Amino acid sequence: MLFNKKKKEEKKAQILKEKLAEQTAQEIAAQIESVEKEYQAQQKVLEKQIDLPEEEKKQKSSLFSKIKKGLSKTKHMLVGGLNELSGEEAIDDDFLDDLEDRLLASDIGITTTEKIIGIIKNKIAAYDIKSQSEAVKTVKSIIHNILDHGDLSLPVAASGPTVYLFVGVNGVGKTTSIGKIAAKFKQEGKKVLVAAGDTFRAAAIEQLAEWCKRADVDIIANEINSDPAATMYEATARAVSEKYDVLLCDTSGRLHTKKNLMEELSKMQKVIRKNIPEAPHASLLVLDANTGQNAIMQTKEFSSLIGLDGLIITKLDGTAKGGVVIGIVNEFEIPIYFIGVGEGLDDLQPFSARIFADSLFD
Image (cartoon, rainbow, N blue to C red):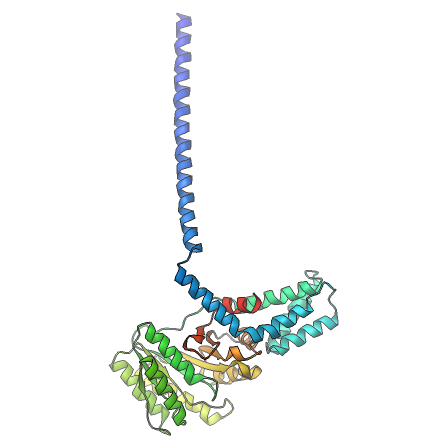
């Protein structure tokens, strides 16, 4: 009897062991299946991120190539100059002086150059960098960090027309920039109205009217030497009554040193607010990159008078002074929304700090 009982218990224990083993195997199999499903899901997400649609790939490549080509002169001046310094020799005062000269030559500006040189000296003192090549790599890293603050979009009104006021001195490409931006908004399906507020130059009115014709957008344009504030009042009233999505307001090109002309901008802002109280939703200063450090002075003057919300930097394709963009981003808390890298309609591109920096150093 004892023998049979022992046998039964052993058999029972064996059955339990087998069942437990079977249950554990099922659990393991289920876990493996779960992990495999999770892995497959992750792979699909990863494939989707890597394998962009062909058209999107072309657009990204085209944009990068266009900006890289436009910045070739600045790249040669800035990066080419830095690469000439890039050796394995120890860093000395002559090297730092040469580095400073090359940064200033690309129109980065005194403030930003001093910042970069200061960081380099601190890293040398901390033994973080020892050779000239390490110093040059650090300069490139600093410039990347200055520029890369993410990509921004223009502010948009919560309701009603969004109003953008464009300011700048004569000859910077302000009227052309407005025409190109009007065309972009039109392509996006927006109802666009343009106000020809540069009433002191017949050529400006005619040029803007031609751009509006090409872009198939509407324009409010009065006679030469008429009151620009009256044009703004008429344009804002129409923008509200006819439910336009966007109103682009041109203004007379003026020297930032002429107080009476600059004060007129203040008056125009007040007139615009009579019909659209929260407008302009962005006051945008157009700068010519060829002017180098003078662009920084213009930014200071216009900003102090009317308060700037953003910048448009034109003619970067024709200058070795594109380093001014780095100086402006570093010195002012004002975003750059567009850069011009050519004469074509699609050569006014939304500013991407990442693409700009990569175009300089890749």
